Structure formats: C-alpha cells, structure tokens
Image (cartoon, one colour):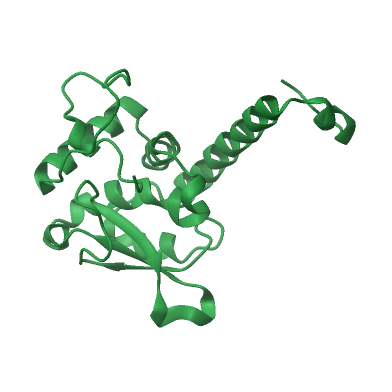
Length: 181
C-alpha cells in the first residue's frame, strides 16, 4: 500500500488507513532503534542514563526506580509520570526490586520499555520486542528468549494470552508482554 497524496489517503478504507498507520509506526520505531543502537551500542548499565536522557532517543527524561509502582504481576517494568520532574515532562521507569542488584539485566528491561515510554498505549508487545532487539543488536527470537529468562528469573506471573497466538519454543507465557493488559 503506497498512498502518497492527501487524495490517495482519502480513498483508503478505514482498515487500509489503520494498516498504513501501523506500518508507519513500525518503520518509525525501527529507525529510532537504529539511531539508539548506533549511539549506545553495546548498551551497558553505564550507558543507560545517557540513553534515557537523550532527546534523540527518548521523548521524556527517564529515571529508573527499583520499586513495583503500579506494575501488574505479569510485568517486569512499568513507566509512569515522574512527579519529581514535571518541568521537563519526565518519566519514571519502575523496575522490579530484584533487578536492583542485577545491573547486567537492566538493558533488557529498559530497551523493551522505551517504545511505551515514547508513545504510550498505542504500543504493542511486538513493537517493544522489535525495538528492543534492534537497540541491543539481537535477533528478535534471541531477545525474546532473553526476556523469557528475565521473566522467569523475576518470577513474573503469567498473563492470559490467547492459545492461538504462537509462542517460541522453550519460552513460558509469563514473560510474554510487559505492556499493560
């Protein structure tokens, strides 16, 4: 689908418009992940603060907090408004407290959450997976497996996922998706 003018867009059905919007969002997220990867790869705990305060990569300055916040039991992280940084429209990223002493795992969780921090609830698990894999320089399957291991390590609860949704071999359903249900 290649709509190039306003007239072309007006001729599209609502379904086609949504598909075009989703494709545009996927392309934008991929481009943003490439920029972040080029600037911060390999992403280490020492580079996280710079990434989380880089307006070219993250729309809001982000502060990491090792508390549950409003996190659901199936989540390993949850972004929220940072009431301490209202003047810069800051965000806080709550990470499960167990992660505090495992800084080697922070990039996995943070990379997954950046699209949600940047664009809110229009973001899906697939967006987060693709962005995080690109940022970390991994294949999506490898990143997904690492997220599964992270979820298992943290003991996150299972989230109900339709049975018809395919799951990679060797991954429990518990780590699938940390975006809000």
